[in-house]
Length: 296
Ligand SMILES: [Zn+2]
Image (cartoon, rainbow, N blue to C red; front, side):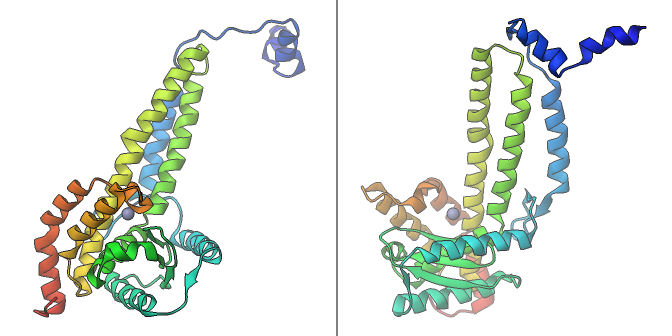
């Protein structure tokens, strides 16, 4: 007999919520913070991390990556073709040749054999360069005065190539996915609280995730690309000592009104230059080992 009494309470279709709403009873939210969605998310996050974690060969850093290399390469190729189809690609000339020559040497020094390398020069005022998964590299002519010479260009290309080799894009995707799930869990956790409190907590969570996780990771990626790039520069017999000079020129170029998009996403030049100083003995040692006493 209790069965019949329970049914209307459990119904949540037309008979449940519909009827309650029909009576004009708008429930006022004044409940507390639910902890279980956060615990669930934390548990899930740990599993997600450990089941999608791999180690960077050159730096030993553990990183979270959730898509396969093939998927990533396909995404890279797609974006590359899209960008090139809309950009004034330079087909020849001395800069084009240099970019290809330097690119091939840097690429060979990475030991990456799954990539089909491609190097392009884009005619643009932008001081920019990028490398996408699969080895798809582009240099914008606006960065050439900052690169200044072959060694400088090798530094820039080494840095960009390192981002692709270290799968930083895929790692960022995994972080964004986790942040999205975290935001959902947080939404459920505060769902019963009043709107003002909900907004406050969600806002703080967004800021915390940005400054506590996303930005530190992006700086970590930059430093890692600097380090790996420097090793590639040394292995391919360019001068690693040009690296701090390139970033000084970059800082100078972006301090004027000609703001460089490339520099704006990168850490402070002072930190960067200090790190290069720390890594330089190792880089010079590597250069000697790979290239002998061949002068710069
Ligand atoms: Zn970078």
